[in-house]
Amino acid sequence: MSIRRQCELLGINRSSVYYTQKGENKDNLRAMHLMDQHILEEPTAGVLTMQSMLD
Image 1: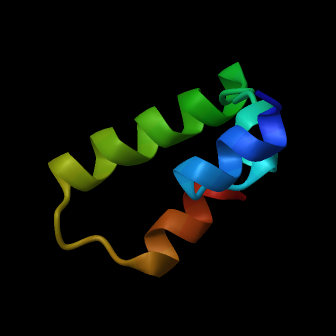
Image 2: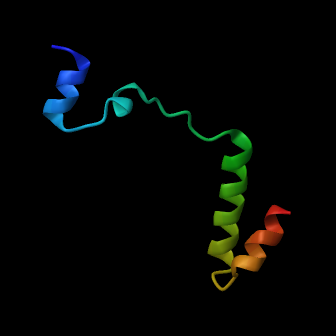
């Protein structure tokens, strides 16, 4: 049975069959970790604080 027919029967897009996740790069993961740590230590920190961390 073709991939096209299988996808039709399952009700999914063919593009989802071929898609593979790349994952995040190390720099992004480090930045997200630092931001998570900061917000846990300072729960009242707002968007401007987070923006300044990224500059």
